[in-house]
Image (cartoon, rainbow, N blue to C red; front, side, top):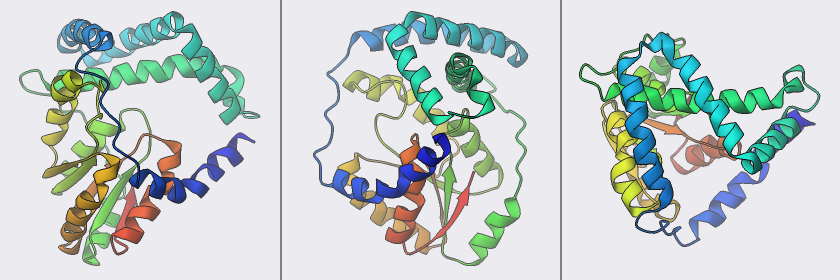
Length: 259
């Protein structure tokens, strides 16, 4: 049941994506809110941990933070546990859905530590194993451009861009202003830059637009792909599994490489 749900999710995505293109942009959630203030406090303390602790010590800390998240947000935790149970029903891994939720939050904090460590003088340069680079070379040899497609996995946002950069690729990234910590004016302008500015070190260019402004960004991406360029698109939803189909159809069928 869980697998069928996962596989059937993208079926109606193209239709819903097209509808979203006609909607008005979502307004930012005010100038600043209490969550922004809380994030500033958390980022200050977490930056100290990310900068001072050896990377091997991150996991016990982030797991503790994950447990705190789960314990202090009971309503959200019940919803997330129910989602895990529905998605993984009948599988062995579903035996302890609460642990999965805790470790998912721990991984989110772990990724945050990566971004914060990257701001430290000297940056953050992890070892990354790249498997299948020959497929990228083969795709570029067809001279139709390449779209890298990143799954919604822990640590994918930053590490995938690092890996693409280490392959010597000039990447165009595709994102929305809300990518990061916040959806307020203050958050988008300042807090979210903690993510964007680090990622931009590994990108040639970032195309950032609201969903209703995708047409202009897609046109720019089309021109880049015609010149055999490379684009990275890392989505945050199971529904987004069919975005490669949408992008490939709109952008004259470039090669899509999963990461």
